[in-house]
Image (cartoon, rainbow, N blue to C red; front, side, top):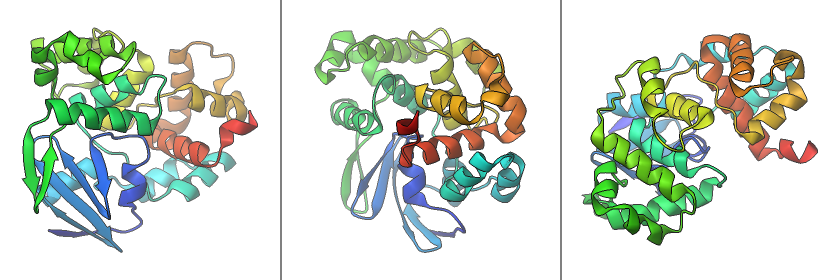
Length: 274
């Protein structure tokens, strides 16, 4: 299938540290959650197999009113630069479990290491699949992780994250968790998972279920905010107070502001100036 897109970069979006269920081979991207997907970009067209157009648009945030979003969050010189630099990105909707596993693994880790670990886990836990002649292994399911047991996880050298991953798999296995849950339902549920703190939870809400009011803050984001948004943060000390200050400032599309700030800061070494 083919879908026309404008002002969008598939490569930039899928490699921006917000989704960990895709890998790239040559010019194609592959993912296998429920069923295999192959997708590539050719100019202003997306060419793909495995999902419907509606599902691809939902997955990649292509239904978002991006021009209105940019206009609403463009409130200062720094975010204006970030928007211009990262304007081809969209906030994805990867699903609750893929986001949970990815961001639990992200704790004190790098994007490349997360992807390597998930690929290794897919090779062990994943189901076999095929699309357009390419054999794939599915994203590691919580069922497979839980049923094979805690000790099997140790082979992936996840360190302290081993307990986090197994706790998440066990909780999803024993409880009903749905992308259709309200934000507060998910907050109440996922805080029961060992290793899911405020930052990981905000990442799951933003990049897992597309809650655009969420504004996750890791150490990198917090340093950037302290440099460019100290007047907005004011006397806020706790994570919750800082998040509220930023979401009040950027409004209903604060999640896009976060993505633009993170992407611009990460790729322009903003951290090195702090």
